[in-house]
Image 1 (cartoon, rainbow, N blue to C red):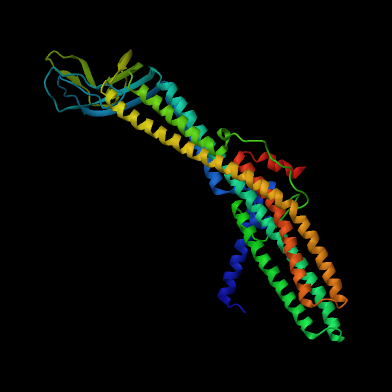
Image 2 (image 1 turned 90 degrees about the horizontal axis):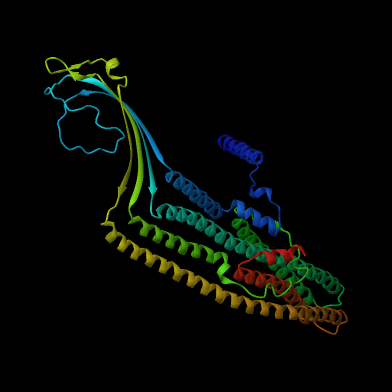
Length: 479
């Protein structure tokens, strides 16, 4: 019995679990408990939408697209508006002046009547439009770089998706084979129990020695252990499969579809083209992106020509003209300094070129070219691995096909041997050891038949993975 405190905790936990389940159901989110039957197309669909690494790759694509949009906006004319109201003294001296990057010129002019500590209000409004009109190829290079960054993120996602789909398909076939083994071991247990029932009746009637009954009991116990082991393996394989789709659940039942009804059509495709393999596209896009960065580095050493326009308005509580005694009238009130009284505009073209960048760009280009070479070597290494895997897949497919031709012969022979041994035992011409041996032989032949069929599909999947196209493999499920 639960104590009062534990009972309250249990009740609160139950209510919370129910509430979370209702929220998930209302929001349309698929939970692992909602999945009881799972077919391979559904598993691939769930993996695409639920697996965290794939969702992370999709987020990277959206981020790259947003960066490209931000760059396109940055290439447009830039406009800025600044307004300010200050209360300050008006002392100024003649000399050089460096702007701090603001949009306004100095507010007050140079005094000619000496220095004064009296302060006045000043105001200013400015609008500046700046556009880098001539970039000598930098604008196009930036756009090309941003576009290739999006394509690289897309290729990275497609490569990860393809690899993960192969993992899901392989895990599905392994889990399906494990569940098929449970059915075969259960059938083997049924044969052992039936034989146990017959032998028990014979021994009780004195027609068989007692050792036969003991052997039959041992065979039943061994068959039960095989069922338990196969069930454990099946749950482990299903758990691995459902983990790959993002919804771990070891109790899911798989839809066998056509995997054990017939063999697939062989061969899958006559050949492959490694250049279009999804796992190579991301390497190719990395090389293209590196070359775009090299082009941008070359263009960055060239001059830039910008069009500049500015409209300014200024107001001040200090008079524009000197009084009779040579001083300027200062009105310290806010109303005197806030209204704009003078206006200026600026229209022009500015050109900037830093020849010293030529030396800096020289070493940056050298480093970038080495990065491109490294990316090319990574591409070649991946292509080499795919080529070797492709040749291995062809050999594995041929071997699986050869085994598939022999497995039915083994199963038929094992069935005939079991039937004959059972008949000989019932007629008293053979002993219990021969019967148990043929029973074990039949069980092994049934498992081998299922395993061989499954291995043909797995070899076909391996071949499709090296080709870089899963669609022909998946299309055979609907035939």
